[in-house]
Length: 190
Image 1 (cartoon, one colour):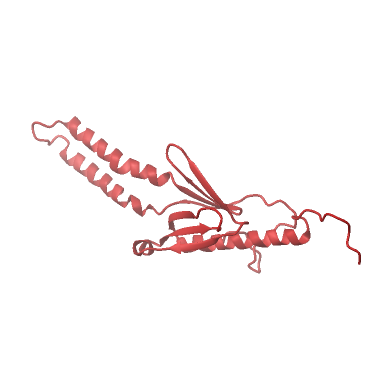
Image 2: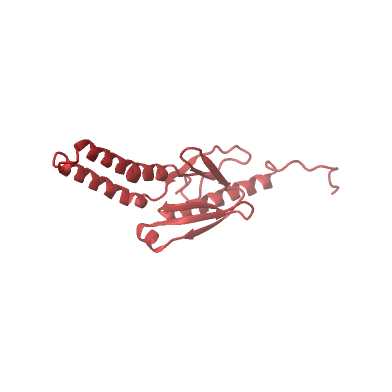
């Protein structure tokens, strides 16, 4: 699912001590169901503008209609779309990254190697759409929330796989002595 696998179903792993390059697993935005009302407003505004253009009562002019339609589109369609688009989630084989913000960008990340707990919350509407909110907590930093994640079960499985692979690689490198510093002091006598 998230890593190339061999015939046995186990992810392919690099040789011990070899550097692992960071690979993109998934990049996505929150569920687009929040844009439903914006899409509906866009359709209604275009329909009403097309119907009323040239048919306005005497005190109103066509430029007033176009100005009102433009303001409605900017306020009720473009701004909600920009807010939705400004938050993105990226999962790599090393970490989870959340980027948000329109003017100034804010970035938070959690490393798979440190390990974290995964909590999934799904409200009634989220369950109907297959979405959910994932909270990642490592016990040290503030929890990282991935809000309105589409296909939340698939993302949950992917995160669990990435934690497992990172833990296996870290344990293997520590056991082989490649990831740990050399012992200090005199050698032990037999």
